[in-house]
Image: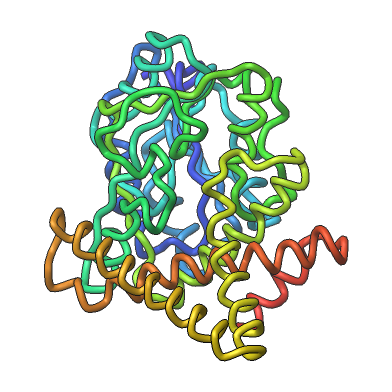
Length: 343
């Protein structure tokens, strides 16, 4: 491969990913190189768990792999640092929690060129180990937990409002202004929002395969989606409208639960209505659990309603927290980060 002027630059942000980085790099460096070759840039957020040392050892004798420092330690700054250091005219973003088909990069480039679009990706397929991770992965594909976005549907092909990871011409990224470095989460959605607002098109293809490892505990899932909900408010504030109505449903659910309980204290009839509504939610959750598990493992059924509830509650609470911080108190997001660092 011509690593001096490669056709494609793969960029991977990471921090403290010692558990996952080997499997990721194994699949990345076995990629079928597109015409013109490729390079791999790992933007490390100053990991202190041995990740940096492992990457350096892995890179010995492999001139196509480079380590890029990300001192601010958030995904958006790491991605931008890698893009600026990249030599390829096409950028393919990857993630350390994901494994990739051998033809992943080649398919991304081929689809982007054939469809003449501005960003392409495949579905977010999942691979889980253990009981909870398998349940979280199964729920990830259900429209009940995630609103039915295209990237949760393995067989979907067509135009979408956002894609997983992404493949762009480097020049297009420079034109739209790279990733928003204020955002700790949702930087992908926000970038895709800007691309679409500029008249760009996004495409999801069934031919692009990768397997994401979801969070392995309810606590880590809660923290993840709490941040997604929180930073979604900043994206909506920035663009003055949501990218999709589905993004508002969890906060309506959480506020409905809280306000319904308060209103239910006023009159016995209202209290009955409140509990009947919660019962309906529980029945709906059980029904979607059964529907989801027809494609997975029945042993997960007891935990599935709980997993769905964590998806909804965490995102809704994060969104509510974001409304308080960004819209009412005009904060910059520091309260979220300081709060999580204490938890």
